[in-house]
Amino acid sequence: MEVSIFVPSHITGFFQIINHNNPLKKGSRGAGVVMDKGVITRIKTSKIDNKIDISINGKSESFNNSITLKTVELLQKKFSIQSGFKIEHEIQVPIGCGFGTSAACALAVALGLAYIFNLPMTFNEASAVAHQAEIELGTGLGDLIAETSGGIVIRLKEGPPGFGKIDKIISEPFYVISKTLGDIETSSIIQNPYHQRIINRTGEGMLKKLLYDPTPQKFMSLSNEFAEKTALMNENVKELVDILNEETMGASMAMLGNTAFALSKTPDTNLENSIVSKIDFNGPRILE
Image: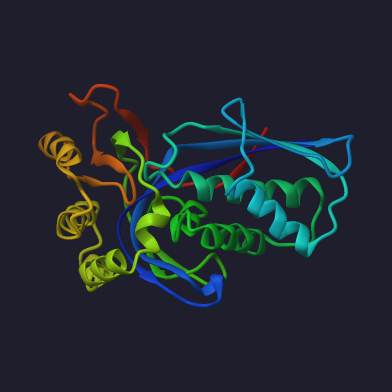
């Protein structure tokens, strides 16, 4: 038995951190865009009981702080999964650079194992397990609920589907142009009290402004304002953002990664080695 699942990636433009002792009520509010490049995950059952093999882009995954293994462990606490299995992630965007790949991997694993082993859980329940894995490892806060939806997503209430609440900006399928200069350890920002204070102070009121003018242009301008006021954007990323601002309808920094991104009506850019995708409106899906 095997299954292949695609989960789109997601870039957050601005956000606020909402803490809670219950991981299902912890997360972020804000806004971001879902992309049609993401993570393809193949899961295949094994004849060796309890043996789990995990690989990312063809290389064996270390089990230390693995979002995939954490998701598996949380599922195993809920259900008896006796058979072994192999999980292969094919990640189409840079890892750790603000594209929500950890959420995509966790969501694919939860949905894939539920499908293969016929686990008695709904889509929202599987998503909640993946969200909990993200929260416990500190790898993300709000990418997952956006990835379950697609589009330019407004996160109105924190948490996974069933707990959180989202809306969308009405939009055509713009191109998303991005270029990354390296990763940022997400936990070093979202678990740091100093950064939390600045992020929440800067993000306060931005959702209200976006809901008053729910357009892609407003989303991008607020994202750029957030990146500058939080001082999370370094000079090198700002140079890329300035170039993209001249070419597109607006640019900013991906939260959280040393990555510039922009929305554009065309795929054209002067940035070399850029990633060009489109907005994904479909969310996760099983591949034939």
